[in-house]
Structure formats: structure tokens, C-alpha cells
Image (cartoon, rainbow, N blue to C red):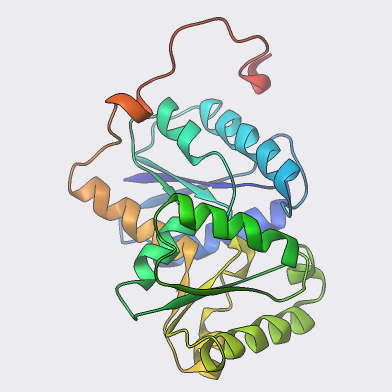
Length: 241
């Protein structure tokens, strides 16, 4: 099968990191195609950038020339999954929901550790909307910006791991979810320091997408995610103009 893994920001190096994490998690025979949007912010850390990313990800998928069997939206707490589900009938998996749903098989309570504090409410809202908040112990911020995961990796890793430890000792979390696509390669370090299972959303999303495909399941086109009604939409898709 072929899975499109779409970064929500325009930073190519982060797309590469996400793509590599997806390939490590993928089963033999699964092809991973990592896409970078043609427009948008270099990192998504607020509502404005998240809404821009929602359109940019849909545009990147619509503009992709080729077949695919599933799409992964690789941004934590970002908007747009519902729009993709209206556009497509293949499975669409968001890494926020993939990580949280996977965590609930592994422990009673889970925590998410993310980047800046301003993104915490976005993640809380997405988990509540998805019905995944009942067993959420906390959403913690490392205080590190998304791009600092690459520019200052040692300081970023220490800040993230420290918050993961506090989530376990203070918030009583039994599972940790890494709350950013760019954290995909930190799983082993967090697990070693905390002693609890650690879920990377990219890896979880790949596994879920593969499972849905293997079961022959596709997005329901009845009611909520029915195809958009035919009408003139000015300037869309953007990249085909």
C-alpha cells in the first residue's frame, strides 16, 4: 500500500524527519510518500498557522499526482482532518488522535508533552472534540519552539524529557504521547528516563492506516463526511492555478 504523510508546515527538514519515522514504523511493502505543503508557515504554533495548514495540507493532497491508499496528517493538534475526510474516501488519520487512541490500550491515563504553552489549548480542544479527553492526565509544554527541536536539539531533548518525567511523577500519567511530529525520534530517550510506554503519533498513525487498509475499511461517505456539494470555489485548488 501507499501512504501520503503530509507535514503541516513548510520546513523540508521536518518533513524528512517525519517521513523517516513513518518508514521505520511501516510494514514491509508499505510505501511512504512524505509531502510538504506549497504554502503556509515554517512551523505551526497557533490558531492562525493551524488554519493555514489545514488548507495547505488539503491543497498538497489534491495536487498530488498519483494513487494512494491512506493519508496521514502529521501535525499535533492541528485543524483540517475533517476537510480531508470530505475530500477523500481513503482513510485519513491524524497523529493527535492516533497517539491518544493508541495510548489508551497501554495504560489508564496518558499525558501529551508538546512544544510551546500556547499550543496546549489547541491539543486539549482536538482531544476533547475526538472524545479522547476522558483519560487525559495532562498536556504539558516543554517551552521549546518547533524549530528549536532542530536548531537546539540537546536543550530541546532535555526540556521535553523533563516534562515527561513530571507528567509521570506529578500527573500520574502511565503513558506519554509525544506532542509534535518533529519529536518522532525521541521515543527511546523518553522511555529510558520515565520507564513508561511512549507513543509517537507518526508511528501510531502509520500502523492504524495500515490496519484500516488491511481490513478494507474506508471513510464513510454518509452524512458527516459526504463529498462537498458541487459549487464554484474561486481559486481552488491553489497550486493548480
